[in-house]
Image 1 (cartoon, rainbow, N blue to C red):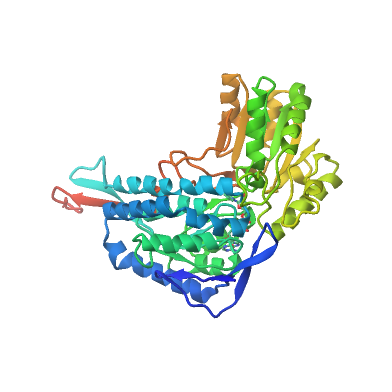
Image 2: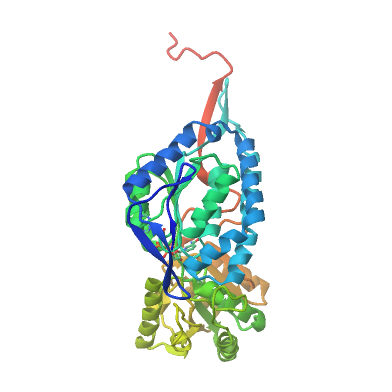
Length: 487
Ligand code: NAD
């Protein structure tokens, strides 16, 4: 069985410590194991990142040289991304069509942030004081700790790592204990492409052990976290103890609002993509469907027809449409939430537990509930699985009220042919991203992130590199300093 060990200072660390098995969700069998790191390896990795930040080729490189290195990394990814596909699928069971789609474009995030690095320059400040000039500069933080979840390890890492490196920081990554393999393969590839030793380190293991030790390390200067709101709270508390800023990208319970005047076939496609791509294991999953009463019955019937036809299968098979859930504890959680929704009195129109019955691996098929009310767990809590909760509304005002009745605020979809209504709803819905007659796109040009329990801070967008920089003002006198105590 393949053993994955931490990657520190440009090398795989020899390992005789404890291991964690990594299970293939399609078979339920362990396919590899990963080192269960402790505070000792966290310390080693942070010190290596701190050294690389202060001395050596990365410390001496200006923004343009860093951009060149990022471009070389992008080139290596463009040439070799296929090597990373299988380790990620064996770990998290994501279907090959989606993983190939993500990885074929992975290089473009690094290219984008290479070009952002080239734009970094001091900015003159128009101060109002006579006899002194001031300029705004930007300082990298130093060691950034990046903590990632299991659902899309390498894409989420790109959104953190590329801007953090463009800004001149060095990074220690703690991938999910459920899916570390692709991150370790990637770190090796990045090193071979010319990323100097110590600039990117990977510490594997459990969140409350290795993860917390990294966040609490006295040389850690910034934390960027993607994961659950439970994990986010703990990370934020640990970061606050060291007065270290944290960016938190957390979960969601995103609404999709379909008005009666919408192009219904278009909306069905958007709703299917929102909840059933990656088996609902995406932060922006559109898991609450709000249907205007006159079209509710016809829309639900069409949606069910499409959802029933989705093919469950092996994640490595390009024909598969629904692959297994990523791991066994998650399967248990999704199952228990489906059972609870039934107990709470929601009507189960499509039962993914029945569809998956008898299959080896962590399968749950598309699941649809109607009559979901605001007091039910299924309305309030993130499932992070292929489970859709449907409710109805009459007026636009009621739709907005229902959409906003959530502790989360990551994304939302609005489907209508009335442009003014689309704009009104988009403005009124409390979420970091609202899609109108569309769902799910992500691009370096647009910030992504949430409000309320969905987190704080943003990734991507025009300020993505600045999130990894600290402002610094330099004042230069151009006239004699007046006597402060004239006679
Ligand atoms: P998780 O919170 O369990 O774990 C995420 C990462 O945090 C893992 O690497 C874990 O080891 C680490 N961690 C956990 N506790 C920690 C602690 N005390 N200190 C330091 N590190 C700790 O989340 P998950 O189950 O891996 O991922 C699923 C969650 O991620 C879902 O809630 C999903 O919505 C969210 N997510 C959000 C986004 C986004 O951009 N907003 C994207 C993808 C996933």
